[in-house]
Amino acid sequence: MRNQEGYCLGIESTADDFGVGIVSFKGEILANVNDTYRPEKGGIHPREAARHHARVAERVIMEALRRSGLKPKELSAIAFSQGPGLGPCLRTGATAARALASYLDIPLIGVNHCVAHIEIGKLISGARDPVTLYVSGGNTIVAAFEAGRYRIFGETLDIAVGNCIDVFAREAGLGLGERQPLGRVVEEKAAKGENFIPLPYTVKGMDLSFSGILTATISLLKSGKYQIEDICFSFQETIFSMLTEVTERALAHTEKKEVLLTGGVGSNNRLKEMLKIMAEEHDATFYSVPKEYALDNGAMIAWVGVLSYKYGLTIPINESFVKLKWRLDDVEIPWVEENYAD
Amino acid sequence: MLIRKGAEASLYLETWHGRKVILKKRLEKKYRIPELDLTVRIQRTKHEPLIIHKAKKAGVPTPIIYMIDIASSTIVMEFVEGNRLKEILDKLSHEERRNLCKRIGVLVGKLHKSGIIHGDLTTSNMILTPEGKIVFIDFGLSEQSFETESRGVDLHLMKRALLSTHFTNAEECFNSIIEGYREVMGGKTEEVLNKIEEIEKRGRYISER
Image 1 (cartoon, chains in turn purple, brown):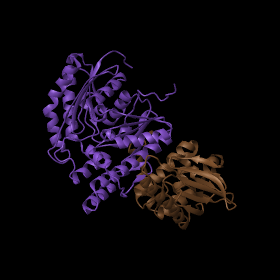
Image 2 (tube, rainbow over the protein chains, first blue to last red):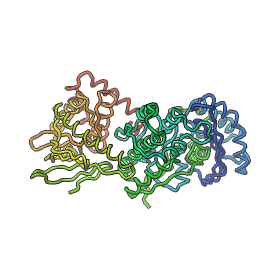
Image 3 (cartoon, chains in turn yellow, orange):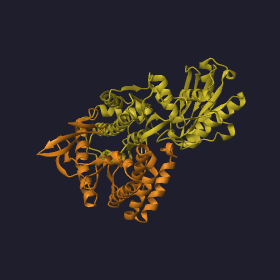
Image 4 (cartoon, helix red, strand yellow):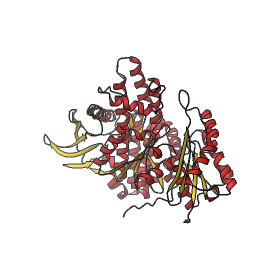
């Protein structure tokens, strides 16, 4: 294990965010700059998002360097999100990372996006060995460390929960012309809801399904019989209860003492509240992650770059292909000790 | 008397009208709003006995259901006397173990053939009675499906359970189970075995690769 001082620059570009972070080998975050692609309407178009990333890449990298106060030659390694994600977006970030690593003649590190969310969550919140619920527009995963890897204890069988919320919100015409995330708009409406309308509750063992509830919620909407506030309330209560139940099963199974919530959907206050109640019933501590580090960001890639670099996990440029479907539990994690006993 | 506390339900051993029974009580979850919590618990309290009944009709011994109390989401069922297979499997002779595993395979085949996926096939959930019957318990995670994927996952979980609790005999046991399974499922068995192989390669279960 290498233990010298140094800095890693990380590039995140799995979806609509182009982010650059710079983190020291000690885990200090010196810069975390982000630029988000905003479609005029609808969801993310991968090629349009990639075009956006290519346009802002230079500016975001320069801004991160300026904020860190470092010169490019002071960097020790370049990390990039190698997957999972949207192909064109991943390739744009990877191209920038390869160019930097090759120009500065420093090692390149391919980082798994999901590992990065968990590791930055732990660094920022102070959780040491949590059951993590990672919920975003592209991912819905319950994971915990066991035998050298982050094992998946539950995941979605179809669409991600954030995707489910966004599609519903767009169908309902929510958030038109507003700058805030659709999940926030749904949360605000839900807070005013009072009447619970039953919706499909789909937990299969430890896994979840969101496509049925999405269809059912949209038909509630189209029936015109219900208030939008009540629909949002019922929708949120159902999907978040499902997520909490699966997290609870993983917690009971692993007998861990911490629960960590991260990802974009993790900023929802009702979801936080449910997980907190559940964790307390199991004598576990609940941790959440501030938005800057819960959403996709460059600092998380840089931080896993640091951890990987210390274990010599660098990759040659000619083997740095992006991996669109790279699973969290495919990655060996040598830096987490198995025994957390104090 | 509380004998087991799971994430979803607690099991109590009680006497009920002179009989030894198991009370399975689904616990209230404070994180769910009461309306939803009640709906989920009622649905599951009704669903489990239905599947248990269906399994019986398919020729798979399961506990007798005495009563369902929807209001307290409790199922009162027969306490099955005997030993859990988990405790005795490794103590049997080679021949006895082979026969027993084959019989398990036949029973799993009967479940699958009638569209039942157990969802938690472990040797803790099978009891060998003094009369020599194998009784399947705990259908709490069960679902109805005729899909190869679900069948594959069901048997894959069985294999994983064998590997973790009966390590030295796991492979032999699993092969005997498949032998029995084949007697019921016939040609479908290969499809399921291929599916298991595919599931194991998905990376999710990489530790057994």
